[in-house]
Length: 214
Image 1 (cartoon, rainbow, N blue to C red):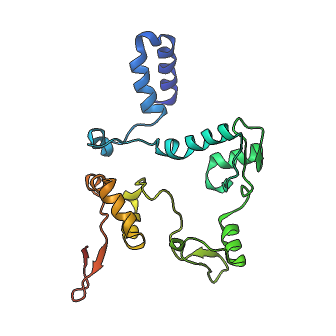
Image 2 (cartoon, one colour):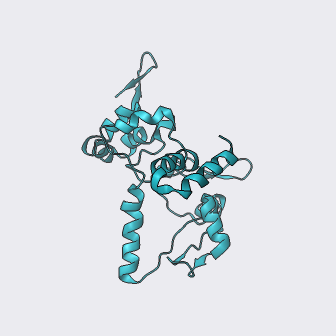
Image 3 (tube, one colour):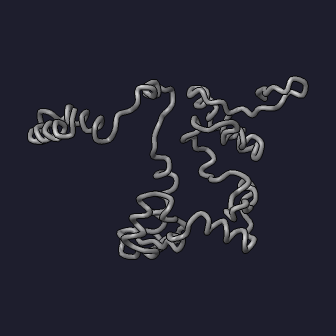
């Protein structure tokens, strides 16, 4: 279907949504929102719930409720380079977006990742051990010797794309108690098994040099 054909069809459906609501909805989901790849269809019948709303429920909504209750505004470390939305937000509002419906201050909006690493290195700022150390290469570029980014430790988003050791295999070594809590108590192990993603750490066999699952 060409873009012109798509728009013509949408216009006809919009003219009489009462009789074509389901067709319009299907068309909208497939061509406007994007179609779910066939390889993920098996997840529709997964024995567990799947949602992208955990960040909204666990982080964003509680923060908004606190701001409204206490009549305060947040100061965050967001940077414009992290996403197109944040770049547009910075261009339109600057560091202090007090004119927005949800006012906030982002004093690091114009910083780059190199700015952050240079500051940490220059002023010897203590950082979480999982990041390792900040060092410079032969061209003077700063880099981390450990993980490059962190997020919610329980999040599985994108884990199927990671090479060994993935986030959970690293967690087994750096935070064994949290690893056990995630895999067993939260039953993340069952989800990863369903997805076909290995989460158990590997060890090297002394004689053969092969990897085996712990």
